[in-house]
Length: 135
Ligand SMILES: [Zn+2]
Image (cartoon, rainbow, N blue to C red):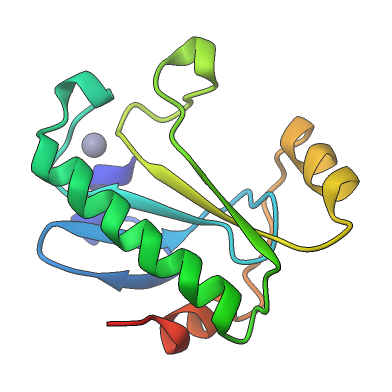
């Protein structure tokens, strides 16, 4: 699934990418601008992931968190989450880091979206994040 996006064979609202990692909007977002950071080299679980890919994944998540706060999304806070394994809610067997912008007072909305993950359109969030990405 994510390998198909990496290969350009499946559509995604891409925020940014390098040779090693790609960031795109989650199609079932828990908040506006919910982004997934994905190492391009396939690894199903953290245990399979080379340490340098983990470091690159987190570094991009770190920059996206800043973009979510400082850019047009104007997030108040950010969750960075890796679900590693089925019992931890991992649903796609390709390691990914969730970057979830959070807004004051959004607890109920986020929990509702967490329980019922529905597809939503992106409302330009990818561009807002991209434009605010720090170097
Ligand atoms: Zn894959």
